Image (cartoon, rainbow, N blue to C red; front, top):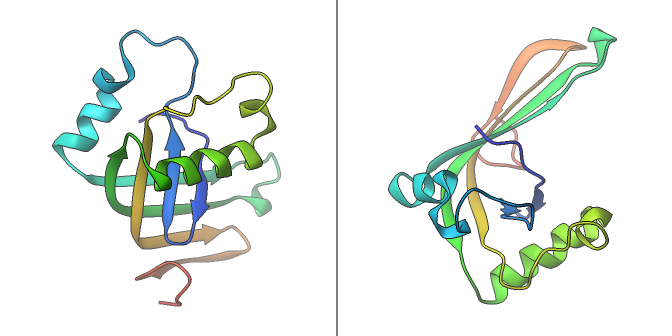
Length: 127
């Protein structure tokens, strides 16, 4: 489990290996090796607030892949920079940053104001 900054473009979630110091080369990081060894992946977005009536989560499940270069990698990096000003100023994402993509196949979500968990077979389509 690794906390990430992500962006959703269509039915694909993207996150990049940023410029923070790492213990090894980006291509040898455990998360990259895990994706290459087993592409089944999930990303959990959890919204926590002290007022528990406002809690919610969304769980995206799909197939992950590592993108090292090309137009899709560049689109993902540009979208991450648009979403997160820190990637433009404090911690720039390199043009050659590795990107992990999750092609979402299933979405589950819940919010405290509605105690029933909802599942969608595909993002954007009701269950």
